[in-house]
Length: 142
Image (tube, rainbow, N blue to C red; front, side, top):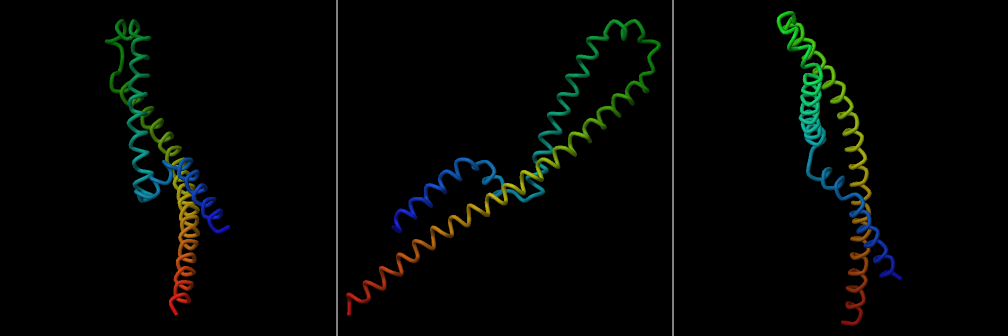
C-alpha cells in the first residue's frame, strides 16, 4: 500500500515536471526582477525590430511622396513624430510585458511551491519506511 502511494507521488511529480518544466526552471534560477527584466529586454528588442520593419514598410509605401517632397519635409518634426510614436509603442508593450511576466512568475512560484510539497511528501514517505525498517531490525537484533 505504501509503495502504491509512493509510485503515485512519483508519477504525479513526473507529470508535474513535464507540464511545468519551463516555469519551474525559470522560478528556480532567477530572481523576480531578473525573470521579468530578461523578458522585457527580449520584448524590447522584438518591438524595436518590428517598429523598424514597419517604418521601412511605410517608407517604401510612401517613397514617391517622400522623394518628391524631400525639400518641403520638416525632417526634425518627422523625426520627432517617429521617435514619439516609437517611445509610446515601446512603453505600452513593455507595460503589458511587465504585467504578463509578473503574473507568470507568481504562477511559477506557486507551481514550485506545489512541487516542493510533493517532494516533501515523498521524502517523508521514505523516511517513515526507513524508520520502520530500523525499528524492525532493532527488534530482530535483540
